[in-house]
Amino acid sequence: MTSADVSPAPSGPTGNSYDKYATGHPLERRLVRGFLRTIDELLPAHAPRRVLEVGVGEGEISARVRDRYPSAEVVGIDLFDPELAAEWRARGHVGAFADVTRLPFPDDAFDLVLGIEVLEHVEDPSRALAEVQRVGRDRFLLSVPREPIWRLANLARGRYARELGNTPGHVNHWSTRSFRQLVDRFVEVEATRTPLPWTVVSARHRSGRR
Image (tube, rainbow, N blue to C red; front, side, top):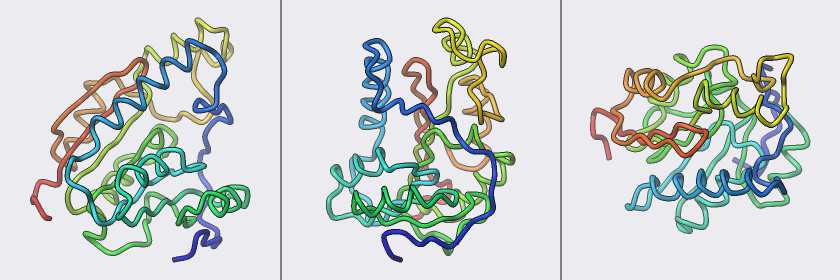
């Protein structure tokens, strides 16, 4: 697979254009630091050989994973967007355009699968999680906005008032409990963390495949 396989994938709901990783707002920067610290803490201690990030975006999380596990093969997928291809090439990412509900990988292909801030954008999250479970063989790390705190926070900072605080592109909404219950239908949840205003879940494949 090249650094940007530009074969178009089926279109679907897309995310908002707000770049939380580059925000200059002091409070937002503090929240993002807490979120990233939680991601770092929940990444497995044992280095995976192959890692997949679904909904990789520009690759901020994948870059952290590559730094953490320099010997691992890290692959990302996202919906078709030529600008993302250029970003991946610039960062040296290995990426492909694909739909998370129809992943172009064989069963048990990855030791670690990441889904960071993606399932809230997917029309059929259960189908997406079934695919994540299929291609993963050991560990999973997933995050979504924590509701209703996420929407209340948007309203508090004067954003998306007409949408009652819902970020454009978010078609699913979970509390921490409901998201944990959803994920646990597919993989075994081991840890749940709530860095404001997110829910982050670490899980393992129930078969214990390594």
